[in-house]
Length: 255
Image (cartoon, rainbow, N blue to C red):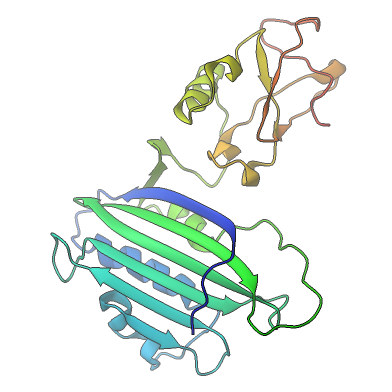
């Protein structure tokens, strides 16, 4: 049976659009999700896992691997039975490292926004299994479902979030682009990194929810070249430190 989610590990909302001439973009998206789900249970080619229920709504339980469940549902809305306006999935499986203690739950919702344009919302969570008695397992490492990277890397799709194109690899941003991105995610204008006023020190892109993994800027703290990613905070620029037109200096970068 399905157990409600516990600790939220990862979540995101992305928009997908394609300019390909085919009319099967909804099916292609759902098939991509199904292929990702199939990795752990690895059902045979004749298994019911590959039947139409995955698209139409239904339940599936692995007969070979204990504790793996898949549940899908749809609501046609103002679309058609072949391309429903809303589609949802819940996928539950035991933890690879602690299968007797922890379970993982992935919830995915797909909404049709327009012609060949979709919004995918994903939430990954984990919790201790009911009935488990023993030492609590350590916190899991920071990860994101591989299906997100697969969609971003697929040339069939143009993927964005908040109007910003998403990539799986870093990109170099100009100072003006950084200011616009900080304003876009609603940070106080007094903390937008502006020359001589504030400084952003990035440390962990995976923990920064605005896809700032693309942010890469070169700093020279105390004359030593170094690149630091964001700790999810912006610290005031120290005006007492020497400043050149193209270089920011801070004794705290990299701490």
